[in-house]
Length: 523
Image 1 (cartoon, rainbow, N blue to C red):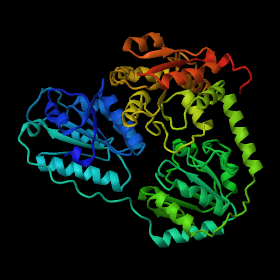
Image 2 (image 1 turned 90 degrees about the horizontal axis):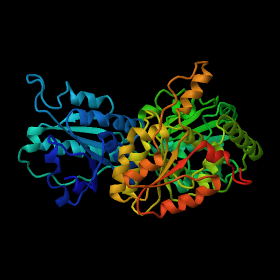
Image 3 (image 1 turned 90 degrees about the vertical axis):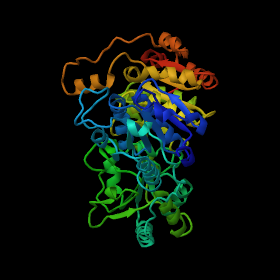
Image 4 (image 1 turned 120 degrees about the vertical axis):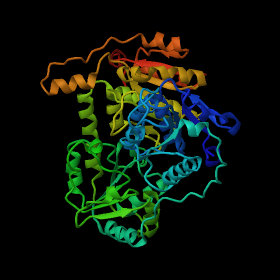
């Protein structure tokens, strides 16, 4: 059934409770990737979904196996990722106690981190739940679903699965709403567009819309790559900078597409605009609660952009925004970041210079990623994935493995810190086992640097922020991976080239000493 619905890969770990789920996987033509931990299996499914545009599927075992994956499912919920978790469960937990892997309510636990969590007590119910999940992935905001199947049901004979249904499409915005918004944008003197990760298509229309309106634009971290970084009216991914509020206050209409403008997007209470806002999103909850002068459009943002590109008056509209002001703002924000995070800007520049345009990057919760996301303009949309919202440490390595499985033959990168890597380091064995030429950029400053800085700002004596690290290069080699440590920033590009061409993963250890060595004239 799964194969007929487009599933080519399943990530998981077999056990005595879920072994029946493995019967027939190879015969169906599905590849199973053996994770080292269920959290890794969930993150791999997440990374696969982000890279492929298809749902990522993970197989989990009763009780602790499912609970181990809940962190990954919570991250997928926060970041709107299509992950389907299929787990075995006990047949009965009220009258029988002390069973292997018993927990009080596995289905209810799943509801805390998934869009929905349901138990299939019959074969037909299992099929129906799979099709419900696949249908919702295609037609609504993508979020993880959990299906639990009792062991006795897994072991029983099953009826044949129904034929795969024809999937629906994302909701299309009403024509009247799209036209009214187009008129408001055309009439504005200083429109400001903000593109988020929820814009999944219509990228060719973005340039036309910006030209026809004379608008300035910005992107969320997830929206990088949607606007050409050479555009003189492009503000970059700096909406979280405090004085971006001053820029927003200059606009006479703000158009936000595919973004919640959540706390982790702007890191303040409000964007800073005083003008009407037009919001476009497939989730009605995002467009709810707008002010009386605002305009909410529920629908596919990419389709709306295409319709605006066709409906707006022909020809480029002179802009009221100052390109000089925007250039100065971007230079100021870059200088602020360089002062706040010494060494991160030149390191980001050196890494970006060594990356092919089609590299897909998965980053973790670490200082290098926090800084790089502000100054690293992406050449393509949806090629940098970060655990926003839920903010899980250890995400990047297994997620990048899932991405590399989906992108065979294309460059895939994991950017992770020394502490976060130790959350999921065992998954390096999976990457070696698969022979993936995965590039693992390890930022090793020997501490929880972001927490140390936060404690200092709060006037707390730094405590429990320095840990004893292993020799990461030897550890990587022990797993069968390659390992290297650039001595200077000039050594980074050659290290990247070798790693992308390798026959297995390469850990590239980056340290503050490497940054401090300089580049002989580069920034």
